Image (cartoon, rainbow, N blue to C red; front, side, top):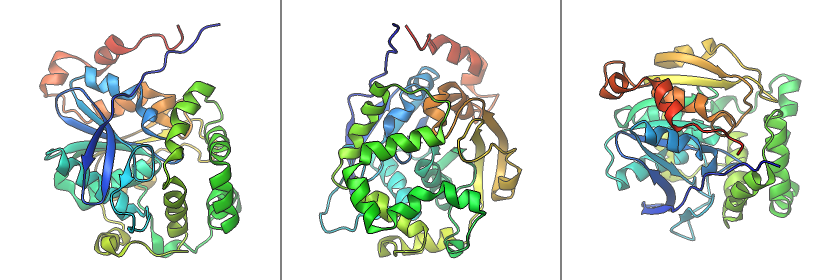
Length: 326
């Protein structure tokens, strides 16, 4: 039986921000691309995307988000919050630590929200945006307005985590809950147990449960955010338009959210280059369809750039790609 060869995202580096000790994977040289994972995932969502982009001439940085993997809060007394303003601020703090004046930002799930929020708040630091799921900044003022019943049903895990029963359940069954969500959100993705366990180790972070609980409870309006981010949160509450060039993505086989044509988000982007549907992908597009995600990043490269003159994007990817099953 053929065994899939899994890319190892090691070694990880560490950067000290004012809030966190951020663990991140760093590969390649050239213009910076920062790729951001979601919940319940980790940096290995980009295990195939990162080397593709590094081969294309980029420096690729993939951090563990707060509460995940080897990233740690520096102060034991700091609230374990994860509102969108905090996640966005973490990105800028990291690129500051790495002395990067600008970077392309890309993400899905929490990572897409963090990337969208950072691009909206600090457009001078973001040269382009790839957002799986489109414009995903939360409108917290509408948190109590119910969606259609079928959509509410799909959010069961958020309501579960809003309860103390959910806290106990996530603490005791973190792997089981994560595996269930992977299957529900990506019904065509045949991930192996080795792939799952490679990521599940990141859930052992001592703050993983509290950070996840806060993210969803805050989204539902059940708990306040950290006052450190209050001003940023107010700016995001206005649902600001994103001024940087953007490519949006949907999974063509998402188990919950049908793929769209992206038209519902265009008013939120000043320069919406295009919307793409990753055929066969569910929620975790970069891990399920890494070529589609890497090509979305490359689409932000201007045709007149030296990279585009030397290699067409499809040629760059073809040089790197090998059969997934050996």
